[in-house]
Structure formats: C-alpha cells, structure tokens
Image (cartoon, rainbow, N blue to C red; front, side, top):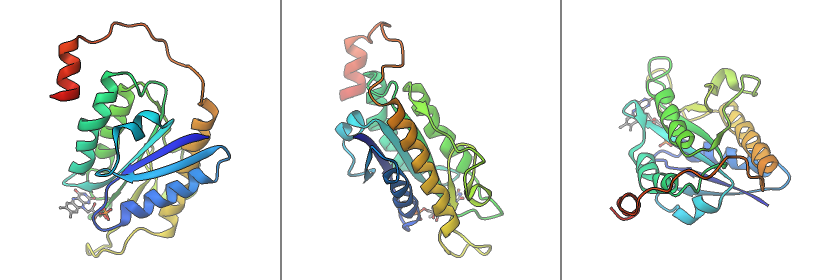
Length: 203
Ligand SMILES: Cc1cc2nc3c(=O)[nH]c(=O)nc-3n(C[C@H](O)[C@H](O)[C@H](O)COP(=O)(O)O)c2cc1C
C-alpha cells in the first residue's frame, strides 16, 4: 500500500474538516492508505516512511500557523538534510477567515509550505482549475477554505470547499500510487559535514 500522511493543525475545527475530506479523497484511490495527524502528535518516522505528505494550515496573521511552521522547522528540515524526502509526493491546503473578500496570507502560507517541500526534492501536486469546487476553494497551489462570513462571523467551511479538498486528496494519492517504488531522482552529491548534521538534528 502507498502511505499518505496528512499533517495539520486547527483551533476552530475547519482545517481538521478539510483534512478529513482530503483523507476521504485519498481513500477513494485503490492502493492508497492514509493517516492524519495533528502537528503536535506527528513523529518524524511518520514523515520518513510516508510516500506522500499533505500539510494543512489555518491562516494566522497573514501566514501559516506557528504550529505548522514548527513542524517544518523541527521535522521536515531534518529530513531535508538527510535527503529522506527526495522523490516523495507533496501537497498543501489551508483555511482562512477570508475577511475583506479573500483575507490575506493564504497564498503566502501555501507557497511557504510548498517551497519547503520543493527544497526537499519532493514532487508537488498542485490544484488544477478543472477541480470541482475550484471556483469557491481554488488557488492554483492547493485548496483554501474560507471559514468566515462577511461580518467575520464563523460560518465554517462549506460542502463545496470540502469537495475541492476531497479531489485534491484523490489527486495526490493517484500520483503517489503511480510513483511508489520508483527511484526518480539522481543521487550522488556530497553529504553534509558532521557538524552541520549535528546542528540540524540536535541543535
Ligand atoms: C489570531 C488570528 C489571526 C488570524 N489571521 C488571519 C489572516 O491573516 N488571514 C485570514 O484569512 N484569516 C485569519 N484568521 C482566521 C482563521 O484563519 C480562521 O478562523 C480559520 O478558520 C482557522 O482555522 P481553524 O478553523 O482550523 O482553526 C485568523 C484567526 C485568528 C484567531
């Protein structure tokens, strides 16, 4: 089976709803199995052993949530150094309040996470505009749910937004199943010095 790992955090539950919809999408693909973990319960071995990683963040202060940034710094960056993420599949999603038509920071947050994945040598699955629900939850990078109403009231993400998340999960899973077991990327560059390894892993 191809392991898909979803890592997310949430305060009001909307990003978790999107994570569950993404998980349902991955389960619709033959050969894929999924686990989803909040950022404070995920362990480095979950990330190291998955074939695809999908990271979801609430938008906070115009960027990704600090708990997801901590996951990137404390976990993903270690696996960047040790080259354990090369060739794995990656995707992102987010939920913002959306105040003032679109809120601010959703694109920045998703691109920040995708850039960390790109540096890891991961194969990125973005969100084609053919995806059902793209008109309400589409950015070209990944689904972004909007949880706030026009007066900032917490109405929550809608069924259409969750549908977009479902299809994103299925897309990532299909790519991960297709690529599983293949060695795609060249290897052989120098290994980092022991001092740098120690700094990243223990410092
Ligand atoms: C302190 C704080 C800052 C926020 N900053 C933003 C922001 O910059 N842009 C935005 O679109 N939404 C912002 N929001 C709204 C949240 O992204 C929104 O409530 C979302 O549903 C949170 O995800 P969750 O429901 O999974 O906790 C903010 C919310 C809080 C509490």
